[in-house]
Length: 348
Image (cartoon, rainbow, N blue to C red; front, side, top):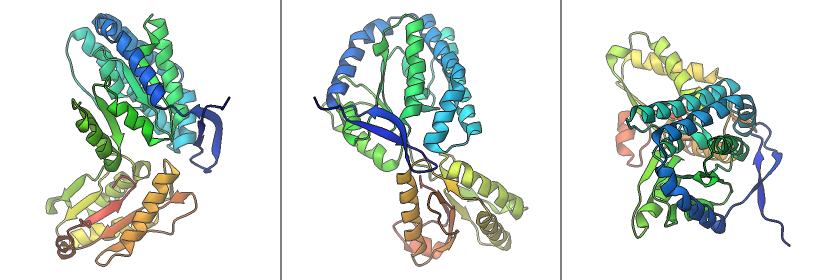
């Protein structure tokens, strides 16, 4: 008998595979998960608000009880600092409790994804009484599995069916395609690249009956600096570089494109930002593919006419930030959208 296919997570610091094997789920697994979720959907929806609130509270407690193990694994798989990861776990637990309170008060709201398989999309769906099937990210399957176990334990303690939540793992795009196009799936939530999100959105809309697609895609975040904000160019540059490089430039809130009116204070701001950037320590990115894409795009941009690039040499595993400066004439002349004053990051 053939052994079922598996894949391994990659150590974000070394590029080497981590020891654990994870299943490569496929279309048949999607069919089973959707069938089981459909079978419990009505009974779960009919559960009282108090019961669903209890489930969310229990998941939050399980996450907090396992916070150190989850954070350590996520640190290995993403290279994100433990301080941030523990903060994200705490934020996720608080978000779950927020939805619990919303249920208890009889109000309704929606929030964005906080952390892994138990983020806001999952929390809001469970609060509404909707079963959830999560496609774990192939870059951090160990983190997803640990979080999923917290949810499974919470379901057991609340005496609720396990089919209310299912984690499917894999490193093939077919898994996501099978989920989005499955007739029993009624809504999709996705956080990631514009390219990946657009592909999933198109699939959702091409169905015989289109379904909602809730996407948080990319992170350009155009920022306009008015002359009145340039009283202290050095301080503003420090704040800008800190925001630009936070989380290796992978925060969805980073200022990816900055517009500023040409002036002496603006020049001082740009020069200060360039100096600070050259002194900034290299970063380890979330995945090798993100790193490779970032390096390729940065090199390509640096070779184009009309752009002045400030960066350091890229290392083997770590990367350095890149800052591109151009003027309004070059910006207007280039219909492809070169940046007026831009900070490159993997999400730009």
